[in-house]
Length: 162
Image 1 (tube, helix red, strand yellow):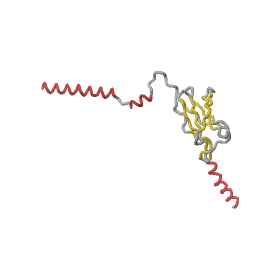
Image 2: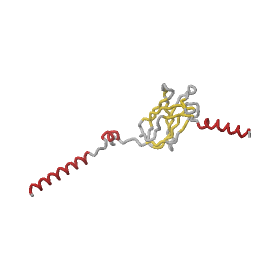
Image 3: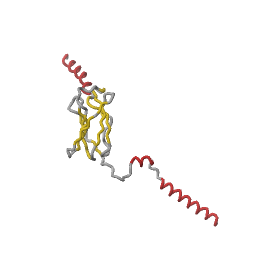
């Protein structure tokens, strides 16, 4: 009975520790970016669900590798005042990319592949300009007003004749 109590107590003590998150927290993932568009990401070391100091003088890096091609780039992150780091990463082409952060006292932390969209073609409509226009159908409004004006004129002319 005493052994069972001890086993239950150990299980209750180790479960929260095992569930605590440790590693690196990203401010934002790169999914949905276009090739050539910078991904500015803040990296925060986490231990037991809290920000943690970074061990040693090891540089913090973000390594990206394109799936299936072996194309690889490494970007060094710069420290911020709050203990986090910031990196500016640019994906050279569209496709699926694996990204990994190193320098926080382990072999690094890797995430599932991100899908990067192809770069916009030169002369292609700018999505930001389309959004700022609000997508309002001015052409349809003008065409509708023209039809109303023509219909009203025809109705007035018909009443004058009759």
